[in-house]
Image (cartoon, rainbow, N blue to C red; front, side, top):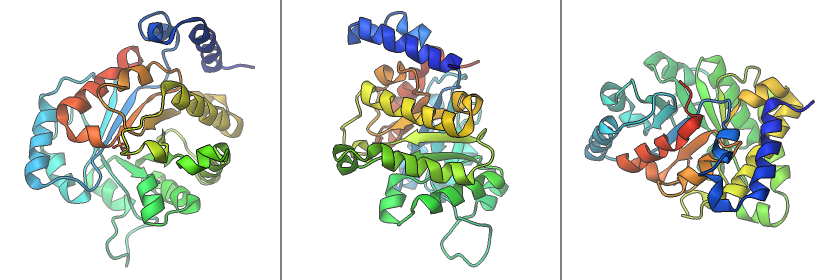
Length: 288
Ligand code: PGA
């Protein structure tokens, strides 16, 4: 049987085919395709910032007007988390770390455990970012085990998946995504605090954003994958967010896509006004 969400997707596809693309965002499509999941926007500050920059960014974010019906998460480098926690408006924004260790506290020099994040009051962690996969050698199994451990410690996890340009061009994109997702499915028991970030590697930090159609195709595929492995009710509620060169100019059109439940933003999250605009792209997908 088709889920409500699948039916909506089918409706959307039908109307998307029938309508010219520019009309999509302005017309019925937006309402028909409103997702059930609460919109989620993450700002991944990566290894950027200084004391002065972080102060400025926090001030800009605090003065911005963002919808209450969107989960908004800021992920500063570890060293600035304390300052950001003290000064960022908690009514508007939550905190995430950009990584954590695969197990609990112990002799793991240079690492920070999920337990320490939980103890310090950081509710979210980004895991499996493509930069950690490619630069730090984190494979699917490591990412999945980290995810399971962080969830068990009480954190919410933004788990990243995505293909390289070579993988997309050579036709192995879905195989790559299957392997990344299957590793998570094998380890994760409770999906209620998981957000999947689809981040095509070729779009990260390049200025080459996926088209709304490219992103929607993969998001729908990932949801279908989860539906077949985890059941309709988990798949329908799962937030699948898009990351890769999202900015204040392209976010709105992406947000109209049925299976895009938010964004993971890198570069544009370092500019308060841009990030605030992106948070406001939720439109009717904000849930109050
Ligand atoms: P970008 O990064 O927005 O700068 O492309 C996204 C990410 O890596 O999470």
